[in-house]
Image (cartoon, rainbow, N blue to C red):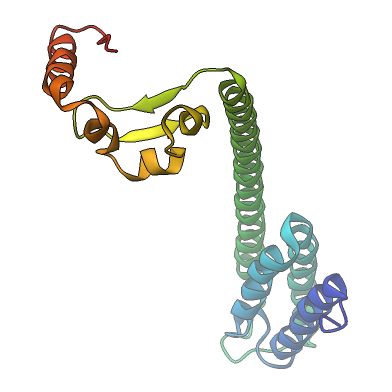
Length: 217
């Protein structure tokens, strides 16, 4: 069924087929005292993994009903075990209690996981919204910068300072493209007239050491 796309049918069919096989082993052997009873717990856990909270409740209820049925069948002599000739109520009560506890705990775990998934999805959606807003703001800023008749740039100070961005108007003013400016970090320093180079760098360094923005021409 799963091969043909009927995943839900395949999940439930596999669960109840396995449940039927293990139940038949429990019935034919020693009832709830047979080691095969542990297989019912495995089916219950698998129900939570394959069918979520709904599967946990349905399969858990079915197993609990089976345990009660096994107790009745043993009391009527249809099931016998080699461990004891008596049908102790405590055995069935403890087994039923374990099934109920596993069902409840698994339901709570799945509920907590679903809450965590929803929280994570909400955080991802919020993060994507923030990233979209940032991209939109950056695009608006870039469009504004690229339309004004002046060169706007972002660079680090100093002769070896890195150039992060230069607006396209730089090419019309200097003959060098923005890619050349950001690709060659020493380009601006080499283009300063030799007589002004040292004085310009020194003025910048002095201004930065005094804690204010340098003004150079």
